[in-house]
Image (cartoon, rainbow, N blue to C red; front, side, top):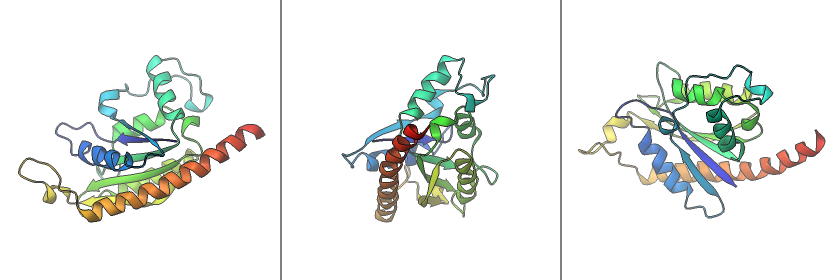
Length: 192
């Protein structure tokens, strides 16, 4: 079982990497899964440059083939997303749109942050995209409202026991569905 966690921001001085590393560390406590943190800033995919639609699974570029392998080998995902203007970031949208079949029949959970609504509107947009990609979006999520109020003098977020409990609950559901859907994908492959 492989759970892939995706960062959703490449903004200079981004907060995003803190909750991404935090949720990765919590997920790694579960020894029954492999956890992979993918920093989209480091991955540095160009703006979508494939001529063929992703649903045809005919990729021309090596960066797309490498991205396809990462996502194709994953059994579930956590998207860590900011909220920009009532939605999610361009870097996350670009990464998602590169692929199609690799996302199918896999669960996704969300960690979000922002002002008062803590990125909830970004997550609602991501849920619609997940549905189009035949992903199963789990209800449980972790939100960080007004996250800047919880930063210490060095700019580090002070995660609480409540944050940790919410993350563990979300990850437990994600892993459960990842196992169930892996079985389902195996059955689907026999039907096709």
